[in-house]
Amino acid sequence: MKTFLKISIVVLFISLLTTACDTNPSLQKYIVDSKENNEFISIDLPSSILKLKDGDVSEEVKKTLKTIKKVNFLALQLNETNLELFNTEKEKVKKILKNPKYKQLVRMNLGKGNVTVNYLGDEDAIDEVVIFGSDNQRGFALVRVIGENMNPAEIFSLTQEIKLDGDSQQFKQLEGLLTSIK
Image (cartoon, rainbow, N blue to C red; front, side):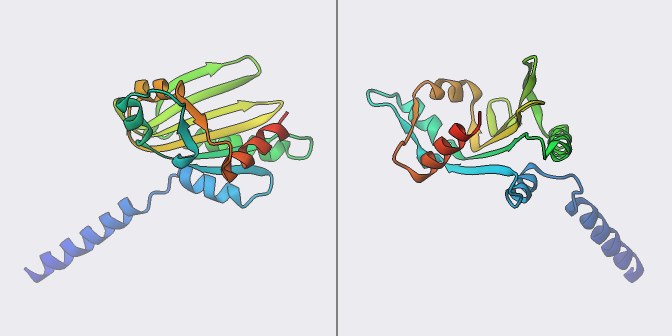
């Protein structure tokens, strides 16, 4: 009996190790690691930067806004010195998004570039939306919207009602970033 117990514990330990050590790269780790590289432009926006337009807003819209926790923005602007980095990093992101846990919502070929929208969670209760756009002449951008039980239809309706808080420091960083990208 003691031998069976020892073997069972060893098997359990090994199975825990193999499932706990996920070798697939995560988007979270990729974003954190990329922030350390000065070639990348990175901004984290808390949901508090999002404000509703003045006027009557339904309770449903207010409830939808509460499902968004944070937005991560990561971009790599292409120039003559970082083409190799651009190609390497673009492939890393594509590999991460090919993981079966990401479900593709939209894929668009815009001639010079591509945009994909992927999500984690269920169709009616999304926990993360990832928008990845790349252009072989300008670079790429990655937007990660983190939330809890987000509904895509409600999020789309919400975008019609949202404005950014122009007085916030995060908004000023984002505004500076967008004006520097041409």
